[in-house]
Length: 79
Image 1 (cartoon, one colour):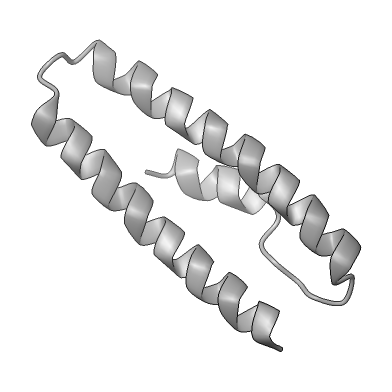
Image 2 (cartoon, helix red, strand yellow; image 1 turned 180 degrees about the vertical axis):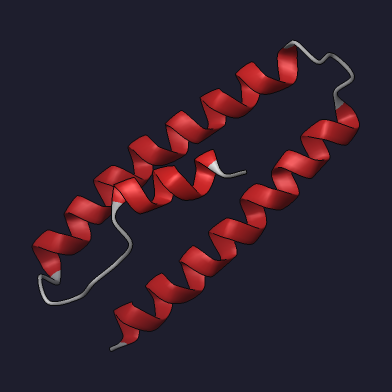
């Protein structure tokens, strides 16, 4: 039960954090060529770490459901 609360709060915080990070990057970086590649790198690294996290949660708590990596990929693609 506690894991579910932690995961939900973490994932809702992730969405806000990613949006805030992207907005800060847009403000601080003036190079239009650098920003997309940096953003793509951040998304890739996050998805790699999220994949490991999802696998670990599935092993430890098989009955808990968290958003799939594909859902997170779609969410990041829409930003």
